[in-house]
Length: 310
Length: 278
Image 1 (cartoon, rainbow over the protein chains, first blue to last red):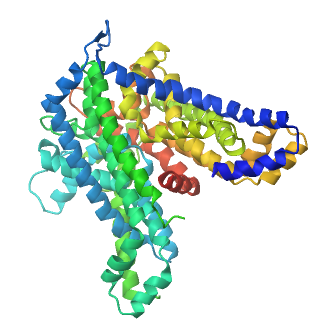
Image 2 (image 1 turned 90 degrees about the vertical axis):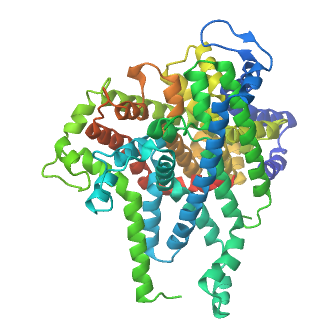
């Protein structure tokens, strides 16, 4: 996009003297310089430092010492790390599936030519804009067995005899976290899927209807293939954000029960800012970074081949 | 295709039930924050109690430095991030859109690369960078970090916004002898205003809601932001959690985001689809 506008600008500017034009074009660099400086100091420099620090024993206070690949050797034998990576992968798969399972019907439901559809779209989207921190603390209250809404509701309806304590066991804890994340983020996926749905030509659906295709086969054979790219986008965005999950596990489950819900970012946090082993934390960060860049590259590869947007 | 009456009723029923699910938690929390503590404990489900009470907000004032301090910190950090992001991203978007110089494409790729690498994975060295700059445990340090990670999205938005400004307009202004700065502030920015609003809105929401970096980089209790205050309230004092104060805190933290979103929904959706489609 830049190339077209810029090449359009140049010929008309060329009427003036060359030096003037060149000076003007270099002015662009001055406009960009502050952003490049910020990104260099607070992004590129720390990125390089991550690699460098991962070869050091680096305590918070005191001198750092070079230890070669020892951090990486330790990482391979670190049981808790592998457990947290396994947990993060499991969580990512489950939450991505759950989000899609909720967001797809939501998108279909609000993709209606009625004025009220817009209102409900807005309502379903609202939890997306509040922070994960506020959402997590809100859910601690909802879930608490003594005065939480869930416990009171279920008791009141006579569905259970004693208040549930979902955070004391692994699967119930996982279940309520997934429920909370679906509540918080399904609206986001819904809107992306909705853009896909709105690009499906109406005539196609109408034609299939005249041919007597059932709603399910219309969805499966026409809609689904046409919104393939939106679906891929939703999956990739949800996968990358789930792999970085931290707030809900730090706040709601606090890593428990028995350290079973410590996510990947949580273990970096523990290594660097609880044990103050900054070198080891950097090695963990680098592993996470490689995985995420790999996923983002797949995302870019997908997005390059998207016929529906252009 | 017209819907039958029953189809329409079914659709509305589904819409309303889902609305209860998505709105319920927020409405309950806000409603309980205005109940006297005893009423909220006895019956958290009902939305109203026999009397309206601000006592939860009063008790939140006794948490740490008091909620007004944390709210002020959050406001300062969010406005600081918005201001710095605009100050840096608007000229950068202009520079990428309306100029051409060697190495421009490479710089753009470097800026966009920040999108692929999440800040969570460079937190450890960032901590040392801030320490070196004497900006650890400082709100300015946090603003600088939030701004940096807003930049790729913001510069992308602003470049696209400026791309839409007709070049004839720019040329005309240049011929009239407008300086670069007048051109940018007086002509370009007003036309690209929707882009500016989107960038500001996302900078505000992201810095207001951010939790992990605030947790790591701020250690002085007087400097905490609202999300950190919430976690401190939710972990309780001597094992007892003050649920009423927690509701009040959640309400204070949520409402500005919800209000901004409802007011500026247009710009939000614009940024979301642009950000997602990249």
